[in-house]
Image (tube, rainbow, N blue to C red; front, side, top):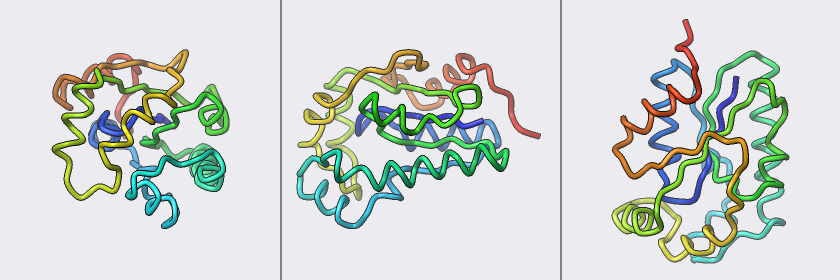
Length: 165
C-alpha cells in the first residue's frame, strides 16, 4: 500500500507523513528530496516551478510509487501533487494507493511558513501554490490546524490502516 500525503507548502506533509509512517511501521519518503538542484534553486529564489520543471521530478516519483507497489513495500510519500494531472500520473494502482489531502486556512499556512527555518521554499510562493492547487476529489481531506499527533490519529481512523507486523 502507498499513501500519498499531499498539500501546499506549510501543510505539514513531512511532519505528518513521517509520524503516519512511524505509527504504521511503514517507510517514509519525501518528494522534496527528489527535486533537482535547479528546481530547488528556482524555488529558493521565489520562482514557481512550471509543469516542464516538474516533469522529471514527477516521473521519478511515479517510479518510487511503482517500485514500492511491485515489491509489496508499504510506503508513505509526502508530495505536493497540487494538480489533478500530477496525481493522475502518480496513481499507479488505485486499489493499492490512497491520497490524503492536508489543508488549513491560508493564515495558518503562512504563519507556519514564517516560522520554518532551513527550508528552501519561501513564504512568498504560498499564494502561487494556492492558486495552482486543484482540490482533490476522493482524497481523505484533513484540516491540519490541530497538532500533528491529532492529525495523524484522524488519518489513522480515516484510512482504516493497520500497523505492519
